[in-house]
Image 1 (cartoon, rainbow, N blue to C red):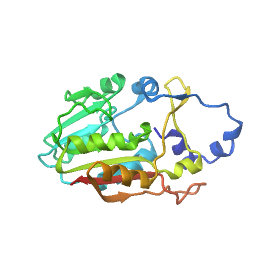
Image 2 (image 1 turned 30 degrees about the vertical axis):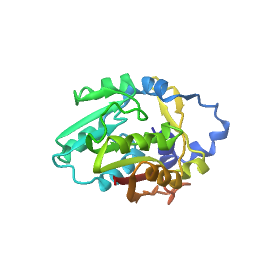
Image 3 (image 1 turned 45 degrees about the horizontal axis):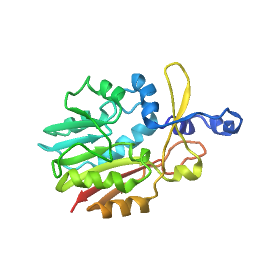
Length: 234
């Protein structure tokens, strides 16, 4: 999801020459993931995803014997992580049939659905993990309200997105197909204030926040790359 940001970390010339490149087509998420799914493994497969995953794992609550929903599960990365942390049941939900096909290699507890209309009963799960997906939705509160609805009282949501600093920096969520074609995925940057307001309206209290910084000798060194949040249903 963050291939251009990964290039920012590793190859500064790609930024310097960006203005001379042809415009990259921007796709809606459903079209983008249909193209990307075949080469999207259930693991942190670039440096920025590794940075995000470390922050998310650091925020995980106790998952032993808990019912967990991996929301926007993609190929199942956080399904595996929730199992490793002792979850009793881990469900995966995603809107993309192609990504769900990838996830079927690791789980049969999958469903197709939207983040703004989760096909689960109210107060039915103990924890929700949602990695790098809320930026696909313009109205953040619609996502958080659904998360709040399906969480049991006292349950947690742990979620992440590209840091809103990226809007100022001009970052795009780009990817390449196996054939080498490059596309951008439509993305909305949400300020921390947007997250705070959306959580409050959804009965969720933010407990902890992580903003891991880009490291290395390049233009964006020391700048935040990821915003990761843990909130509890009150």
